[in-house]
Length: 334
Image 1 (cartoon, rainbow, N blue to C red):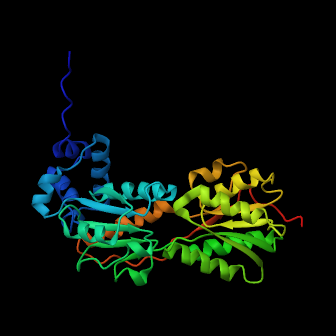
Image 2: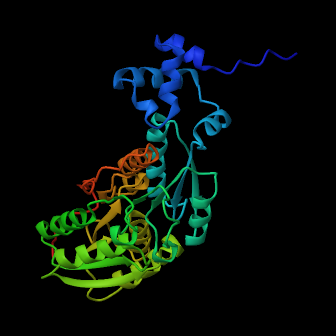
Image 3: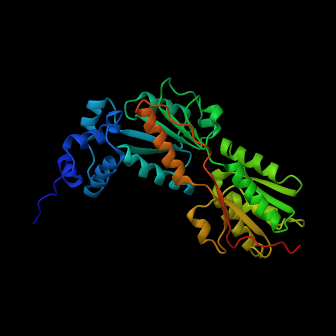
């Protein structure tokens, strides 16, 4: 015995729940300038009603009406990277407010982006943390916003950056305040702007410290981090504090320390970068620099929506980072 399929909610249902006319609902979901002829309070009431009902405007009709698909592409280097999950969460949250759907592409190339820009499938592109091999000239007029990327390589497109330099400076200052003077460094060898910024900031902040540095290939994840950390911590002059380029690398260092019978933080203090979920679950919980991935995604898709509406995206100051102090660091006893 089968039940009657649930009826798909309509614009009329949204209008009734929000206490507005169907014309107002159409304006909210029309995109472009039309969607902004409604007050912010009314717009939010309509969007809240739509979310409650599970209403989505029909994409086919919208595309015919606006010449747009209502789809944006978020390009990330590696979908398995936990930080990009935080970015995606913010993108989806904000995209719904602008009537956009988002498709994620991972492991893309410059040719992939160029093809996506010239097809009718996507209205615009959101390009996050690209490495050097993924950058190339986009077709003229492509609505695109770059996240955590080099403004000089964005071809004039809006760029939303993170205050990586401030975060790295806070990490090094924290270890210095604890009395550490010989620092270990597990540095990503990935050819990307985000890691060059981290390295340059570390070198500035660590001037005057003794530094022992090892490179890590992020393509090999924890395996490479564990091997590099084993070399660093196995030295007779091993450091008593290590700064890692991200939290995945830090987790590899935790494994290497355990293999060598070293305790964190009694024998070695550890600081990571990203503040992904695993950071708080490690034993002991990891001191790390929080990179606000969700905010990065929200600000980026909002800027893209402005471009799609025919307005220039406002410039945005680098998003603030913060040091989250947990139990993986302590005062030096050496």
